[in-house]
Image 1 (cartoon, rainbow, N blue to C red):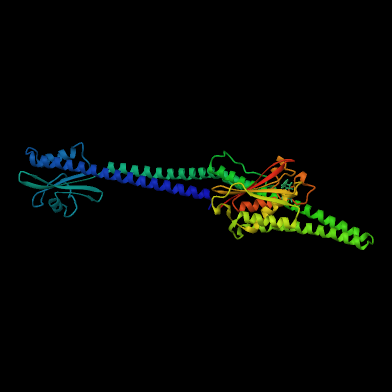
Image 2: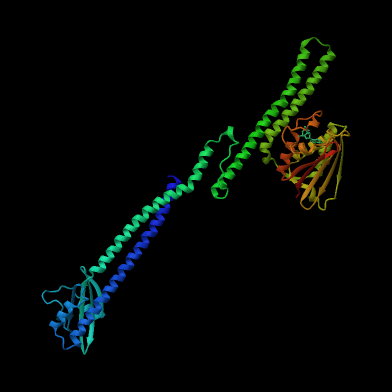
Length: 455
Ligand code: ADP
């Protein structure tokens, strides 16, 4: 069932229930009032008759009957009967017919002093009247034609009102539910046109205020993130193929040179060494690509433990200096940690070492003196490591992009590298709930700053 129909049905059922209850209450209250009012009229009529009969000696039965019949307030089918102590009928307002009345009502009236009941379509009141040592039972009955007809009219009005009210409610319910859900249908239509090829399309955000507009706004945000992810994926694939093509082309041309003519053993040796270095480059690039593509997917499942940052720093320094002996790295504390835990972070030693290796390597690689200065600083929340160099520096525009995979600044072209190291570093630092940032001035040097919450 469509939401529109469901809302209209629920809304109509609630209104219908309220209308029905309301109408029933009105009907029963009116019916009770009518009955009470009619019994009251009967009682006062009966009282007048019995007073005339017993208290006013001048009025005979015959005269009383004439008065009863001609009184202006006479009710339809009205009869008044009066019974003496032996339950003998001593007065009847109609003398030409035998009046039927509910059995046993005279005795009950004597016991209860007063009784109200219904007999066929007649309403009956019987009560005990005591005066001058006489105790008679007066019984009055009549048909409330006007009262019942008014009640019938009220019932018909309520039934018609209910039917019309319900139809209007159902109609309005369907109309308004349709109106309020129309923006959802519109969004639905727009969503169904979005595919991987047109992720740039955006949904109409309407008045940007109501819930449906918020749904559209949030969906547009998701689209934007998806678009960015797709774009990154596309640029990753194109950069990766480009980076792979260059060393492969170099390999091919060296092989062609080797095959073109006969060479001396030394020349072959040189060609093979070139091939070896290009293959190493290729292996290193594919390793980085594999790390980016596969390891980072499972990065959040990597085992984490308490790691001391300076220990990892010294390990990275040793590894780098062993591989590249010309590099010089100074490590220093900017402030001595207050507590042992201030340089301890919850993390993965291998991954953190990879980050520091990359930063130290870049600092030495991109500076003429091949030197990097490392500072460790701690405060009550963060452990900060700054890797500083006096190298070629990074322009402001490039600083915004160097964390993108494969991005290399123009001034880095003459240096070895693929442009993936910093993007890997950023993802690893994010895993450690930290941030990595850079400050730099072209030709003056750069500082890469890592901040990670300590234990
Ligand atoms: P790679 O160094 O292999 O090119 P990275 O991802 O480590 O890749 O760095 C991306 C780019 O950031 C580099 O190509 C370079 O332009 C710039 N860069 C990184 N570190 C430095 C640095 N210390 N000095 C100058 N430029 C740097």
